[in-house]
Image 1 (tube, helix red, strand yellow):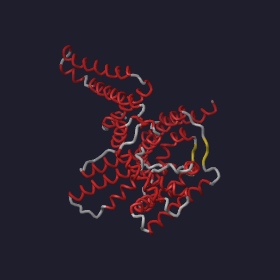
Image 2: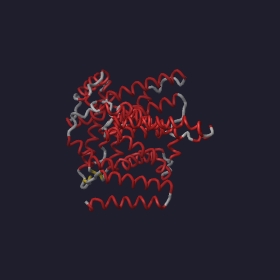
Image 3: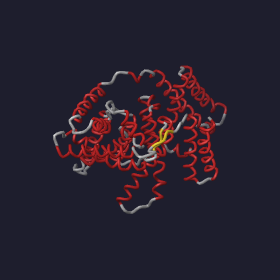
Image 4: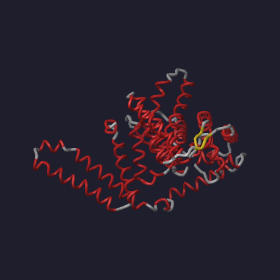
Length: 414
């Protein structure tokens, strides 16, 4: 584990920065920051004094001290950056955000012209623009009960579809070096216009940053590490606003992506499929299963509800959304194109009808009480079980089963 972290510098940065944020939010004291700064200073002085008493070669043997200095300095900077930001969530919107709000409001007015019910219009505005103000509570509960509430938040799924659509839109550009750079700049610009227009949700920002790193690496012909890219995106967001760490969307988004990256190789080894259509469906299904497995305990902690039909719901809704999102955005840019309008209306209606059909099934979801102790126990058991799948050590399986048993017994104890 330590060797894997050492190969990914942004993982280390993220760990130290997150530790500083948590310390600052829990202690809320400038003495904390002073202590974090004093400790690396003492280490720095001791590192300078070592060559005076020992052989010079021993100074290099104590290079870990410089690592401690850097680690504590990063935590101190994170704490300093976090403490004065208690009121940042109520700060007035910037000029970019104001223009994005006006642009989104204009698009919402265009959606009002569609031949759809108010509920369907609010759903369409939500998945296309992140406009949740008109979304009814009943609609949210039905999507949550079927395990597809993630579709109501502009997330990596939405941003990836938009990025793929933009890339295909500029596919006619020449393959020369100039054409590649023009396509890259246009894709990046339109990608971030979409992220800003949809309200800059943490999950959308995360996806935007990760795709930006990926596209930049591809145009520069550099190989990238998915875990390092994920950590870099999280680090950039927390540097911008440390309070993102406590946002539900931020937590769910990064947890889902991490488990997708971790579990996909395992699922790929299980199903070696040659048929391209079946292989694509299998890959989509494994993405849903990986994300659901990774976010189940976090969702239970916040929402106390578990869906029993999420496998049946996710794949069809994702297929509908893959068509609906680019078609809907294209219609917003070309509102007078009637064939597009008919397609948007039909797909929106079919999606809502399908979700409501699953919601009405008996036992579609169950309510489960879940507290912080259950959350920690659940993820500890899950991680121990996943490590066993990849390492195969018996004590890891015993630990996982013991923690799962404790998770089941804990409600009876209370």
